[in-house]
Amino acid sequence: MPLSGAPIEEPDELLLLRYLLEETDPKETAGVETWANKHPENKKVLSRIAQLYHAQQTQRRIVTRDAHRAFDHVQRRIRRKARIHVLKRIAVAASLLIGLLGIGALYLQRQTPPTWVTVYAKNNLRNAFDLPDGTTVQLNSSSSLSYPVEFTGDQRPVKLVGEAYFNVAHNAKQPFVVQVADDRLAVRVLGTEFTVSAYTNDEMIETTLIAGSIELEIPESDLKKVLKPDEKATFALEQNKLTIAPADVSQATDWMYNKLVFRETSMTDVLKRLARFYDVHFVVSDELIYTYTFTGSFEDKPLHQVLEYMKVSSKIDYRIRHASDNTQTKTLVELHAKR
Image (cartoon, rainbow, N blue to C red):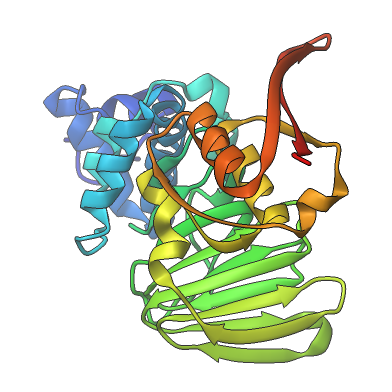
């Protein structure tokens, strides 16, 4: 312990890192804790470093995670209340990538706004993870979510491209806000469960409320609407129009359980979902196919079985081939109507 009245030396980044990982000796531990208790800003620095570690570890874990293990994880998590991790538990679980994350810059520039992290779900994969506030998220394939490593200010903002399920940790003083389509639509909540689908190039944004309450805000129209459980809101981007209708919640969340369910679904939507789910590209030679609808339910089925079912039920023939460019090989599915 430092002598009474002696100046308290400010610890460097390496010492803080070792403290968070519980690798310091008693003298070093006492020094860091004395420094941290000296001023609230010192505790904030320590907390932000730990949260930054947690964010990086989340990304690293998602990249290497087996998809089925991710599904099992989120199914367990959505049945429990979200929890807020204790600082040291976050730190112990964190990686040592201090250089890559720029911890030194964060430490030296304490007034810098919180760093944002972007998590991606690769094609044909769905990923589950937790946000710093304890909110549970599952991303559908070809989606991404950006969020700050620390939620400060009067709200908890995140930015979504694609489709995601949210189980939001309740915080009445700090609403959770999902921003989509370049901020053309915002979903504001306190604590609830819902899904949002907002893929790039889609003409519609869909939000389905599972439990709780959410408020939809459209800045261009200065419009706000409250959604009730088992309701779905559809926002047409081109018309800037919002409609609300009863929802089939199970259909909105089927993708979370590795299922594909279609109920008189337009073939346009069917092909979009199949393309994202199986990471393939469809080439439609007959425009007549787009006038078809399709009904079917598939769980853990390979693409060729789905196509065979479509061939029988919808009179669609197909051919699978592969095309390569300079970077990768793409699977192409050519469709034509049987005469």
